[in-house]
Image (cartoon, rainbow, N blue to C red; front, side, top):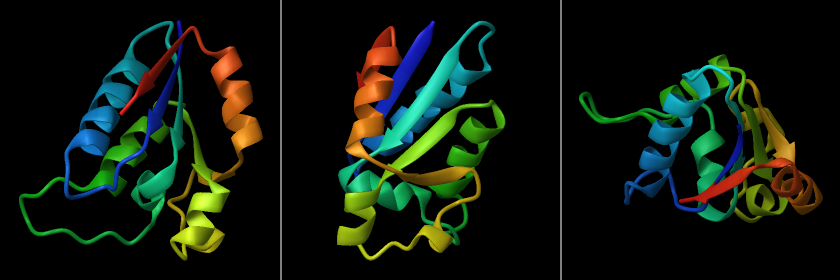
Amino acid sequence: MKTLFILNDAPYGSERSYNGLRLAGALSKAEGEEVKLFLIGDAAACAKGGQKVPEGFYNVQLMLGRVLRNKAEVGVCGTCMDARGIADAELVDGTRRSTLAELTSWTQWADKVVVF
């Protein structure tokens, strides 16, 4: 099955992006599953490299890395990046600037769309 995850919330403060990444990571490991992940709005900050969190606290950058290692494709809304001052060079390896046109294409590709 082909599943598109759309994350909207900031990486920290609420657990929506955390839970979305948990589910995307688990699903991307399952046989026969294809996963794409689109970070929009405040979730664009999930793809910012160099995150340092207190010991014992979850790290969204590491969680995103697990999803990427499972061959998921990750796009980050370019307009949202610009609004938050995130440069392309600051993105986690494997993620990339994307567009609403690509999100539209991914939505048409997907059998399921899951929004957090």
